[in-house]
Length: 330
Picture 1 (cartoon, one colour):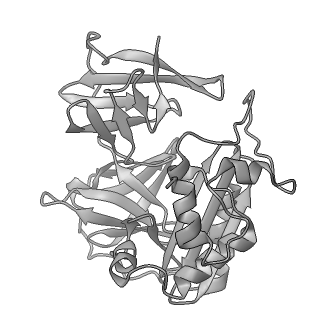
Picture 2 (picture 1 turned 180 degrees about the horizontal axis):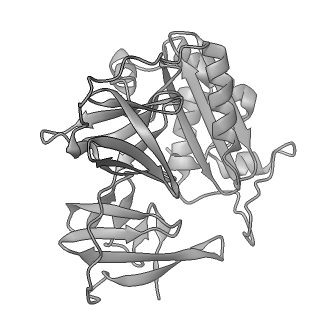
């Protein structure tokens, strides 16, 4: 049975999601459908190659009904599966991101590609949810709007500022380092003082517990520390945004060998988006991303690597791929 038919029978049909489908033939027949727009693309395909990972067409009404299904307890799913999807209190779980808004637990998922962006979040305890769908991609509107609306709905639960650590207390050196997502910030500890650096901006960080600090009116929290005290990621408590630990060694001269220390062209919908570089230096594997950041890579299996942000570099393919985007060697 095709994937799109299985999902229709087991989920979309019982939930009466009549304008929701993974089947390209269904949504292409729909006259009243939005057309995706992507800046610079010669042609935006209607169907993506990764259907189960991001090929769903839906309406905002159907998406809201899907949120209601989750808020009501997911009756179509087995209790064990539903519990696994909601396991933990932070990070990315089984198809669901676990975050917080105004320190209220929030579940959700976002996606994008081929001219569309989407964000849907719900607060199960509050019985509230928000869906934002757009048919353009050159903006963060969907995330900002969904986050702002949800914070308004759940109320002002922003954590209050607590007393600082005792005078002379110094944040652990293991917390300092680079943290990356769509942007990068760095925590620097110098002479007993901590600073959060973003681009050319450097602001004092006021620690209020061993793993929490304020910058202006934003509370940040380090999460999932390893045995050596290194955090996995840095969370903005206000909106649940996380940045992942991304320690990159100092650059060192290195010769090209195999796929490493070479440049690769990135093309999306036939348009050159930028250049990536795979580096192997000082015993570390690195990716110079076409967006400008440098990500550390961890070898998961032979010729398969995982980046700081959780995307896969697959060197077994021809051409190799990162996040399922082909890398064309220059």
